Length: 368
Ligand SMILES: [Fe+2]
Image (cartoon, rainbow, N blue to C red; front, side):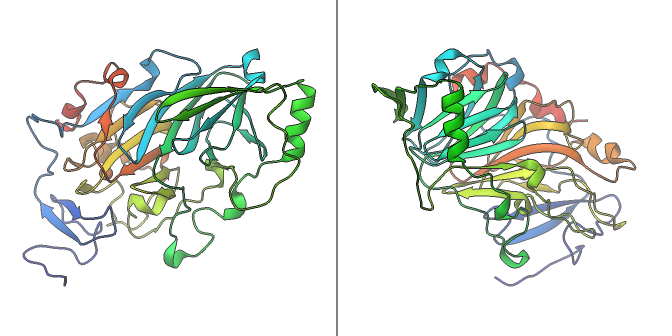
């Protein structure tokens, strides 16, 4: 399709929006498809009522009953499942391993630190680490303290690095930043902690099968190949930015998989051009359900949010910054937020335990 416009419009999206107007992006395929920008005197978030399944959700995971060692399912479809997972140091961990035969396991460490033993070696994690365990890779989490993870399970395909296109191979993060498993460190931990891991729990179709062995299952003496676990810390992510114009959320894509992407929003300088939009632009999630997990920092574009909360905006729901965000931005020159976004193609379902920690009036938070 060709570009066409009528009436009042700007030649560059997200920039030079006339005083007293709001820009709304209507775009397909996330931020990659056909797109138009509409100028409106009022934002589409000025509803006075919403009835039906597109009502947005906010959940306070801090209030979720802690169920250590259990993957608490939060949201799911056939491509991706999100879980909340708490773990604390126990002696039982010294004998146990898990394998996920349902898909790739991407742990995001929201709280705590520790190590993960795998067949391929040891990986370390701390608050802000992603740890990517490919399907069926046996592993044992050894937390140093209380740990909380958001687990993003890809059920229909491998995780990939984002397509970096014209910004090149090393943009956003350099593949050299991946933490690699260390076999000798794993063997040292096995020896020092006198570990004999003989029980392996395997998850397939969300059911557990327990395997027992008489000797330690971490016995690989070496490996080669391109299928192995890695870690990536948010401090090694280098947010893309333009001083002149607000970049779309897809500029922060950290991992891609079948039917969804994982993006990481991090502290960054705000746009410095006087006429640049400095808050996320109003848009409709035309094709994607959007989940945002608030990890840390100051979430200035939203009202009354704290770390550990998770919002869920179904596709078709128009949204944008809360009314106070524009005022909140004041003289700010930087954002100070850490958040993980999961943009999902097929509709997500909310699992029952999550409904108990829903903030019921979230949909009203755009109403002044
Ligand atoms: Fe969005």
